[in-house]
Length: 130
Image (cartoon, rainbow, N blue to C red):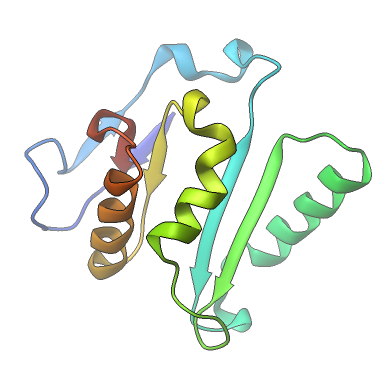
């Protein structure tokens, strides 16, 4: 279950304080094709919430060849901003299987990523703000 609170923004009426639950998305219903792509961006490595956990999860996934987790992280002070081309290249192998995209962060980040996802043909119905 995902609980979400969206700040005031320019998104449609569905993007306000609400509880979101989709019974079909519990862990028991995950199939062998499940994959979590975790994109995160931080000002610095020190400010990376859960960055060390994500890095360890990636190490475990790689070590045991699980292919269920992919960590894509960016430190804004060290790396360039993500572009539509970058997002498209990262998502391309999974485009037909993407069921949901969850976004959280500052409004400017949400606007940028939301726009990029639409440009790479991720439907609005798949994008959720947490």
